[in-house]
Image (cartoon, rainbow, N blue to C red; front, top):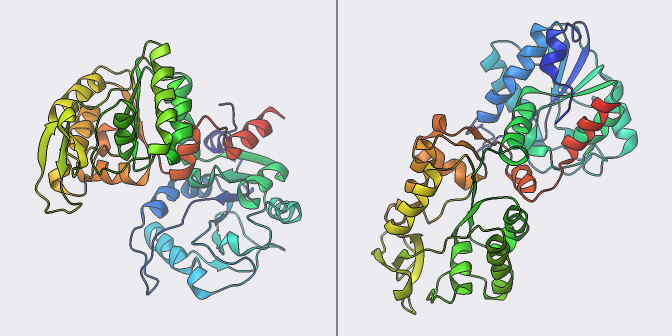
Length: 397
């Protein structure tokens, strides 16, 4: 994608002395007392902020946090804990500025945090007046929040329309590069793993990928629906019987291209959905009426692992079983380790997928781990994200 990159502006000396507005994703989890429980997103934002400071810019950074009501400030919605944690990590004071839309003062070499951008009336609806006021605060707008790239809001889209310069920060640029490598210019064969509880939530993704990938692996409740569509008994397993025709359409679309959606040949079942439920491995044709399918079986897992090890590119979204329960985690672990061992370029996204990657310690073996859940899914659906669209348009202007 042809966008202006903030790293290039800094390298060319074009950020020196400029007012730089960074839209980061600092939406971190907090406990009931307001303490940050996990600071990965704050740590991930630092390279862009430090890049701007090193370039001699006057730096403003903002983010959303939680789901505040616009125009109604509550202490729980404040970025104050985030500013404190960022200050600790960067070993400098990070002042928090409220009511900043009408104007803010920041000097070259200085870093300030602007209070929760979703407190501003008109933020979510991308109000033009608000966007223009934001744009007037800066000389360079830097979008570095992939997690919000699928939303056209004032601090993510409108400001990019009206700022003097609009560019992609290092996090957003890395996502763009990884997505392009995986989907726009993939090394073949391209294998996609789409798993989850419901076909309905991933149907458009499945349809989009069916026209592009060489192999489409389904897992979890989605696989159960595909098994049902293939005429197999799935007992009392989670499935969507009203979407069988949609599942068959995906199978037919793959078949028409000489590709396939592998249907499990063996599964791991239980009589109840519980971590301590006895697990039984059986042929996919032997599922009883009172069985729950909670994982793919070892034969299926090994066959899929063989495909993944021979892949050129792998896109992974979702575990293939109830990996939170150790008795039903073998399939997901086998898939994860096959991806880790594959020479393919791999891109993974989605909360459960990231949890599985962390559980099996394969972070360094995955080519790229996407930080944006909803944005990642919309890319897989074949949508052009608003952030990509506006930054590409501004680069061409």
